[in-house]
Length: 146
Image (cartoon, rainbow, N blue to C red; front, top):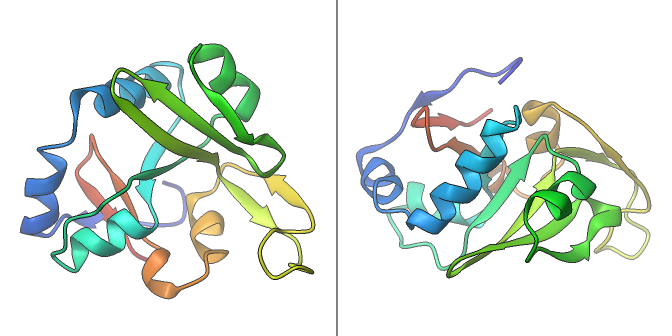
């Protein structure tokens, strides 16, 4: 990712990534085959780095919502105006959000406006907790922790 260097995964994260469901890996591979980057983000990264078992997985990508909807026929539009699509394949449903920069948060929950981007570093910078501002590249086995 531009502007940020990956570190090797900790052993616990490496083992967990090695056990990810095949249906999730298919989603990642399909998006990467279209020329897009994709990362595990948020609570699952926080949990696995803390040596806890994550209970959900979220993805961040350079792919835009309409492309996700076209690529995955079972996908659900769960917030495309914010860049979020629930991608479903086989037994996996995963929230996948386009990299973005947010405007203000008048209601404290949803951004007033969203600008889609291509920078993992900018996307991680907008996240709510420093510990949530990490990402894992599954194929490169890299941890991004700005």
